[in-house]
Image 1: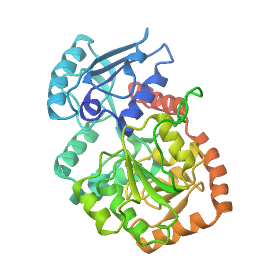
Image 2: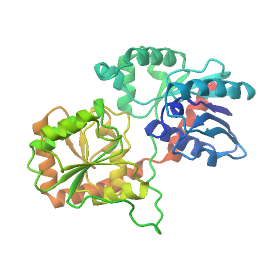
Image 3: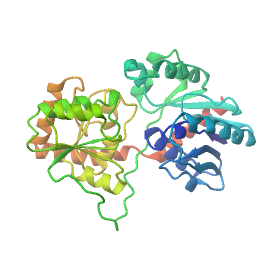
Image 4: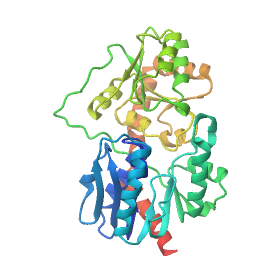
Length: 369
């Protein structure tokens, strides 16, 4: 079987959940020699080591660039990757990495992955909502099969688009704990006081403003700081909000954090807080669990499906409920200890080799249909 993956998501981001998904999927798919994989990223600066995937059955077209993710990089790669695809002839499976099918990719069948319906649920939070939904509608109608990363995302997809449920398959992401080098110590400076931890993008449906307000109104300020990792430096609006809420000196923002340092931050945190309003799968809670950090997560979208009984939950639209559960989780050492043990068990349910095998079965099914 000959499979093609394009440049799209890698032209628009250097890191992120979608990019990580394709890297792990391809890495585990290539272990079987009955499949020929072509990965055409073009110019990129991905944090994931795609060149290391080159092998007898995996061709990787990847060139490092200092061009920032965005329209220019995307446009250049559209031309470069189209030429590469043409040179490889017809593919059994074309698996686009974003919301459109490249017109010059010759294929027998097309399989796409649906991550979430954030644009559909919160159209006012995005500038490009109409364009994204139009692109999704066209792509999903053309696809021979759609992979959804959770059962929640599958049901959302059916509710927003006129699709045959029979061509939608739920395949969970896998998960691998950080590959840490035991010879290296924890890197980077860390908080001195006990702290709550937030990881990732903070904008729109990630609901970080809600967490700030809940933290400011809680009884935790004299005992815990709030530490954020990644997502860019605080914006001027965020800094104004932190000042307005009286949180100067209590909220820290860490950037360019290595995996060794991030793992240490998870291990030392009193609690990892995940207030997102919408997720298709969500890696950060599993990262926290893998490092023995108890998780307080929003009871919304797929999050309870993925985290199971290994997390504390709260209503991400109700500050009183968030505050109550923040204080409850931190008041009970025994409850956090129980969640720690449950978390170690929960992460074992998600394996990338199972994701790759289930995805290959979808490919095989549509080719045989």
